[in-house]
Length: 255
Image 1: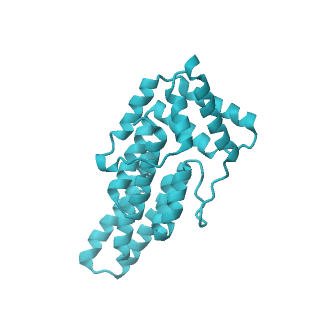
Image 2: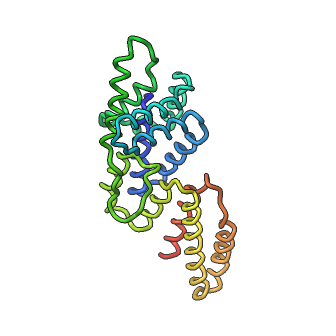
Image 3: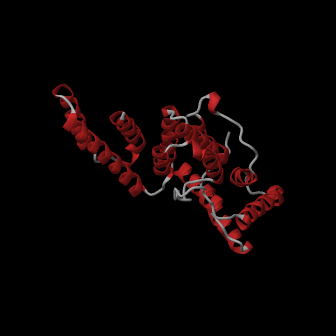
């Protein structure tokens, strides 16, 4: 599989399912996917190109045509074989049961053709047609509307992910909505702020329990408090792992 659009859709679905079903495996897999993209210049560029075009809204044909051209230039500096190799790195993270065939997506099909088809006289008509398809998508595109007032940013969300999120939204509790928002949000400051907020909530719960617990339990709670104070500072790539543990701790403290 070389179609990055389908690959991205599979991992987006895995993330949503992981949140909805409270499945750590799905969330950890998405973390590996995101880490792999960040470590690869090719994958990062491809991700941003897809995101640029999927979220672009422009009713002017010529302006949209220029936008498509400039985005495609970003990928033409790489060999097709190298892009295929990097996409295979993402697919290799999945097992056979997680590799699913997505519904046909005209935009993804056009982008894939433009990325993986060499420019030569025999391909000019087909290439021109696929470029036109992408331009028409941008011309007809509308700003993504997200149900409920969760204020998810558009920057890292594909249309398909938003649709799937909207379908599943009612099944999430308030805590999971916050985690999902932080996972998808492209603003690292928000993720850190959400993490610190959760640490402080845990500290408040621990302090409350310390006031009413017996001596036998107090020592364990003090160790938990000490650990929380040590964990107040995290690196960006630690967010998913740390926040998952924090949420579990918070739920245990409440219960």
